[in-house]
Length: 133
Image 1 (cartoon, rainbow, N blue to C red):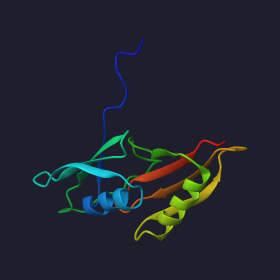
Image 2: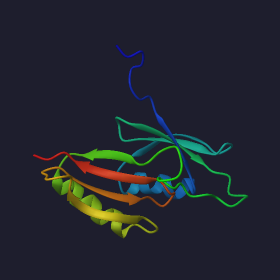
Image 3: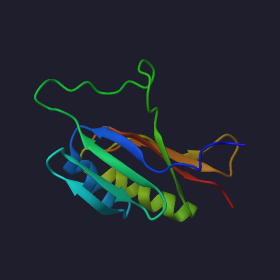
């Protein structure tokens, strides 16, 4: 039996705290629950999952994460309720300034599950998943 009880929160270092926070709130409908401008960091939630976003130090060049060469977060996968939600959010992501779509919604394997991959403006690679009918 596991000694832990599940994910409490996930901390992510981002290139631009404001842009990432805005993306989660405006595109995905999350809400901000805490902020510490002295660090700087904040917490956001979708009501189930809580993320802590940390601003990286931009006084020196910032190194982007390379999922094939660095140990760490490969991507953040979030589930959506319906195929219609996936398609609607895909359009919002594609239209959002500085978001980069890796691929639009497509079948996972032979389906019916579908997913899409993108990078949000602060540099986190993300996946939206609809689990099928």
